[in-house]
Image 1 (cartoon, rainbow, N blue to C red):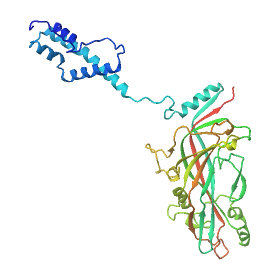
Image 2 (cartoon, helix red, strand yellow; image 1 turned 120 degrees about the vertical axis):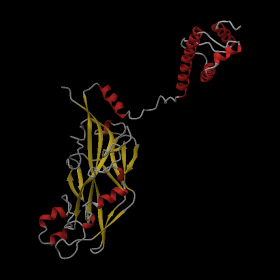
Image 3 (cartoon, helix red, strand yellow; image 1 turned 135 degrees about the vertical axis):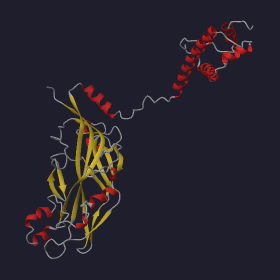
Image 4 (tube, rainbow, N blue to C red; image 1 turned 180 degrees about the vertical axis):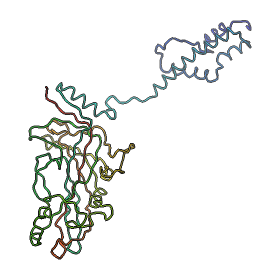
Length: 382
């Protein structure tokens, strides 16, 4: 027995099942339970590397020739290939498969691109798409000429519900929206630019202040006739000197608008899609985006929610804004600044020149929200 050839001995032990014969051929699809049993046996043999050696020792072989060593090495390499294939199969089997109906993350741009490509009409894509809109938050001034406060009522304040040319209100004064209010344009109620916009991030900023006093009191004060438009809410106003606005609105050192800060600390922002405005069913979709204080102010350089330091707040993938709500499957888009509770902001009435303090009727605070993303728009054939 001691003189038997190593390969003859191992052929016999392979046949008896004591050792496993290596096979370089590709797997032909054995049953899963058989594959797992074979893989387990080979992995155990590989860990100790004693499967063949033990079989030879049992049969009296205590030494081998160089040629037999090369044969054992070849046999070990062949078995190693099988082991690696088995490991790969076990690993592949353990990897979870995504559901067929699951939309992969960050697929919004791909889906819009496929939809526009299917139209067969010319279109353009702009990576630096940008929409902005302003909303008015009227702050009523309550109290007396010696003890007063601005009252910011709880409620919802809409953005992107007006386009250039639409009617807007400034503290009750009727005006027409210009590009100072929004860059959303609709040439007519039936004609649109045919643009679809994938929202990727948002930013905001303070957009200005207005103040409205009683016009009858303004008429009584000498020298204020030229300022009547400013004092009746018809013009924008920046007044950290406290000539027309209560000085408490602005920080003494930095000049920061504290009225604006109070709203940022208290409000949240929603995206809203409404089919009822486009003649569809009564379905609406309203999604909370974030607290307003987490939406970076583009005027505050140090404020950031992104790892790269860019002053933007990324939003979940797939939110669509279209300038033609009639063709949107979701309905008319708007954004909403929601103030859940009343805000009280104490102020001191100021002397406008009458010799006694005068209390404003209301102060208008204006916020601008910007949508940043990718724009897809139709282009006429050349």
